[in-house]
Image (cartoon, rainbow, N blue to C red; front, side, top):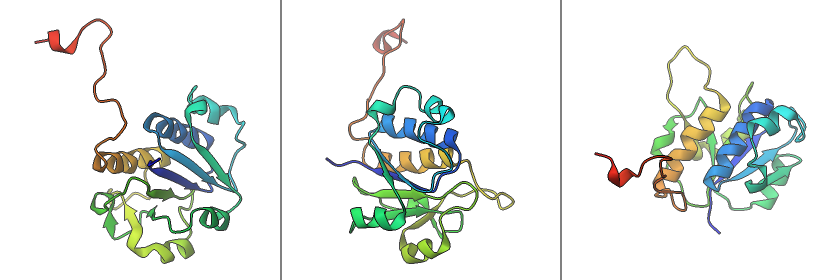
Length: 169
């Protein structure tokens, strides 16, 4: 089965990871967490932020980056960092690509980024700011990757509760 993958390297804030888990569940995207985590997977704020979507989530947890790499040999991994020369919209995402994000306080370690120079991407923002919120950054880049895939497998049109779209003028 082809689907995108979001990877969080040592996430620290449970609410961010919960929001990301919900986004991944809603889009059919796998979520990969690389330890150490700054919270327990049973944390109430994590669970609350993910709502009741946890059963729909394809979740994978790894002890460290080495274990992640050993289980995904040959995977194309984009690295989201505020320091990248390439903007996230310049990348061409494939249907089975991985997009990795670092911990909220420090990002992805530079030793890792140095190995993936061609796959480092960033979201443009003002020069006086360090970074965007992690869950927002994941959503921005994930939805660009999904757009490039034609939003394959996602709902095309929703129905209103009281009206039908074709009846509206």
